Image (cartoon, rainbow, N blue to C red; front, side):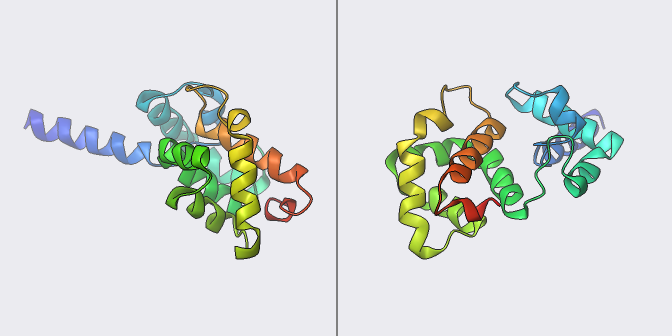
Length: 153
């Protein structure tokens, strides 16, 4: 019975880990910390207070209101290492997925990939860079690019 309860707790915690705590009060409290524990605590805090939905609706509490940026953030949160690898090479399935999630048109994908590769050190300044920090850096780069800014507007 104890094993069943422990398994249920682990399953519940692991499913909360996949809830996107990229914004909301939980994300603000646990910001800058990496690993499963802060991720689960941020998701649990958001779920407990129900504030993430409010933040996403209003664009407050560190939440982006741009749906494509939100999609990119969720994907980045689960695949940061793979994305970093592809970004450093300037190509790959995960980098292509970021472009698709942002709605980057086929004609702009080469420039998109090149921009991210050229600015890899800005997006990932250290091995401890969080997905939120990387997303913020990507959005800032795209906003400054005349041709690509339309994807984060």
